[in-house]
Image 1 (spheres, rainbow, N blue to C red):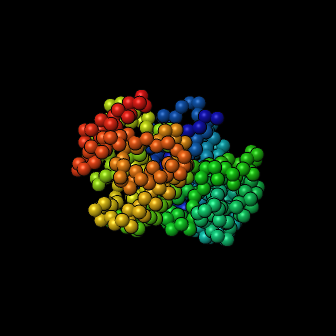
Image 2: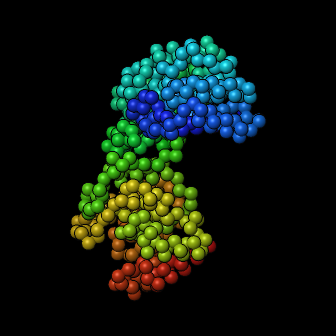
Image 3: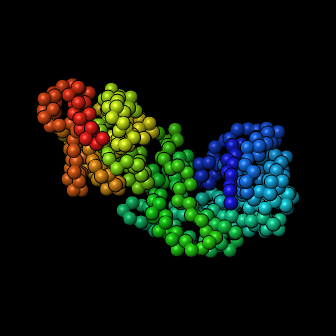
Amino acid sequence: MKTEILVLKYGKCSWSRCIFCGYGKIMGKRADAKNIIFDFEKFFENLDDDVEQVKVFGSGSFLDEKQIPKDARNYFFSECKKRNINLIIESRPEFINENIDFFNLNFTIAFGLESADDRILDKIKKGFRLKDFERAKKIIRSKGGGVRTYLLVNLPFPSYTRKYCERKRSIYENNLSASVDYAVKHSDSVVLINLLPHGNTEVFRLWLSGEWNFLTKKEFEKITSEFKNNRKIEFDAETFRFVPKFPDELKKNLAGVGEEFLTHPHFDVWQDYLCRWFEAKQDVVLFLPCSHKKPYSESSTHRNIVVILDKLNLYKKIHQVMLSNAGVVPREFEHYYPFADYDWDEKLETPEIKARYIEVTKNRIKKYVGSKNYKKIYCFLKYDSESYIALDSACRELNLNLENLLTRKTYGKIKEEKRVLRGEEALNDLEEGLKKLI
């Protein structure tokens, strides 16, 4: 069945208090019925004739008249009916009543039920109970509609979870089977969704504090595997492009040297994300130094490195990863907080801090490299830098070969210079070393 997706950008969720949802807190554009109908007209004008189904997503409820006025809703329904389109929309139960005209459509209404337990619904601040869901279901069925139900896997409540692995990863297991049974009984289709931390939510804060952790895709698949043979059930391991996006009110001043600025929770959750979720596209990695200027690519050292990579047509073929007190920092995330916002002054380091930096960085590298499938590991680092010492030690412990593209011979000649890695001789080493990869 050919399907078209429409994402609504009007108003906001009338409830917007669920502890896991960032979408509901976003205010879309304000528009009256006339303007929304105009947008709907353009949508249908551009709709291919062979489209059989339309799915409508938004940050609230299609049936909420404060978000989608009745006249606009009726226009949309009537156009779908003319085209004999199967329509799937989302709504909260309170907006479903006997007076809604569905124009004899083939329609389905999707509910974010999340759990079939009223106690959990209260804890996640869902704002309705199972009896409200069942009331709405009866009305939909009486009008010939279908019911689609979303359930969240891995909700963060100790009474319904157990600890998993080394970190405090809550596994939403005791309640899951009961919720699935309930949803299957009351629905035409069920979607099991991997709960991931939206930035501006209570769940994100629980992740920061270490009280809860997301499931990797493999963990999600393992937990939900018992339901894979049920034809009513679908699985969604990644509902959005998951990147740790910190809301402004949570961002901190991370300028400083010492334990606090080495093992800060904001660095730790990123390192956890990079090891357990992020997938590198390249199988060759080049570890690079950090820089005072942020993002790194705007510093003189990194501009020179990027020029050489571009010149050799290797920029997209080699995964660039910086090493710093913030941990391992892939190039693609250098613009994100906290990687673009910290400041570690090497002049303030003591022997004790240097030793601690090496220890923490080595362990981070081991976890990161151990989670990836790099076939070749290179670096461009000063041999006596803490980052190189940590990297070299990590690779030795993992029995992996590491090659520094800055040769020891060159480094012996230039190590007393001020900006060693910016110098012509060092950059020549980098370029000659990279040529071996062409």
